[in-house]
Length: 72
Image 1 (spheres, rainbow, N blue to C red):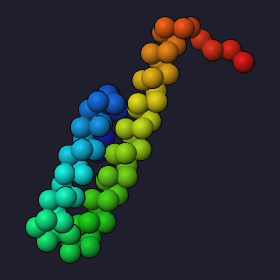
Image 2 (image 1 turned 45 degrees about the vertical axis):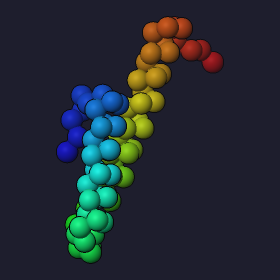
Image 3 (image 1 turned 60 degrees about the vertical axis):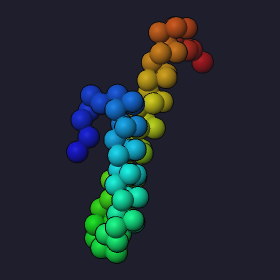
Image 4 (image 1 turned 90 degrees about the horizontal axis):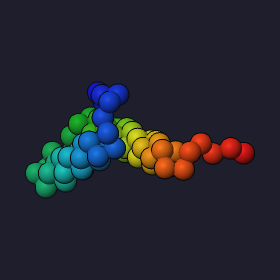
C-alpha cells in the first residue's frame, strides 16, 4: 500500500522497482504465473497513477509558491 506522504521521487523509485521486478519475472520464467503477473501489473498501474498525480501536485504547488495563486 502507498503511503500518503510519499514524494513524487519516492513514488518514481517504487515504480522503477516494480518494473525491474517485472523484467526479472520475464527473465526467470515467473511471468508464466498469471495471477502473479496480474497482481504485479495492477501494482505497476497503481504506482504509475500515484506517481503522475504526485508529480503534477508537486509542480502545481511549486508554481503556486513562485507565482502566487492563479485566478480565472
